[in-house]
Length: 266
Image 1 (cartoon, rainbow, N blue to C red):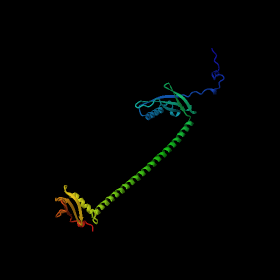
Image 2 (cartoon, rainbow, N blue to C red):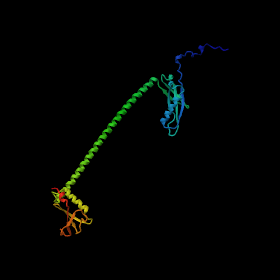
Image 3 (cartoon, rainbow, N blue to C red):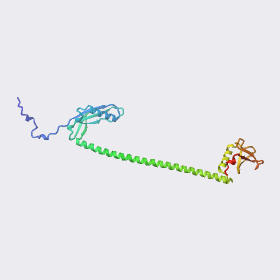
Image 4 (cartoon, helix red, strand yellow):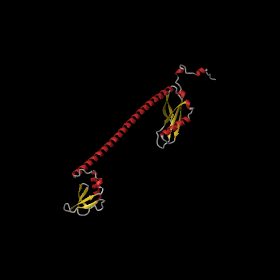
């Protein structure tokens, strides 16, 4: 019977220090996770939920990552893979390659201390980004408020300018009317009386009446008309023709109003 040496013969090879042995490679667990056709964020959320629910060990004992195996396409299902490692194997960090469908997928699990540092940095970066976003939004709001105030002031200025322009036009029109009345020798009469007489004549004259001029004398208003026909056949004022033409073919028609004296300014 062959001789079996002591158990020490099955120990480390002669001359090799046990501390020089390479540490055993950490075990990785790989689980393919298919998802239904959906938007990419919905697929990622479904894959993460599946990875938690069907982990090979209690999720508190594992460090894990989710990887998408192919780009997202509209109407196509998603393909993910969950890669797990025991937390006790990643205490000092772990960098390895997982075999996924015959392809090596590199993964890196940071140590808890490094992970806390990464979280702290992300929090600092997030706080800075949030502050920058707040300042940017505040600046935009301030600029918009300034623009709104400037637009309101501009609108008010435009309205005031339009009002002044309208007043100027009305004053110029009134001045032109007064100049015309003065040129016609009607100084001392109210402009409104003259304008009322002209408006009445335009409203009451016959379509074929050949009006050539207007005259005012005291309370009498007269119209020069070519032809003998009454130029105001349906007038609400009393109209009388002169006994003879003032010019060949031109007759003077006097227009009187019973209330003219009451309307006339003193």
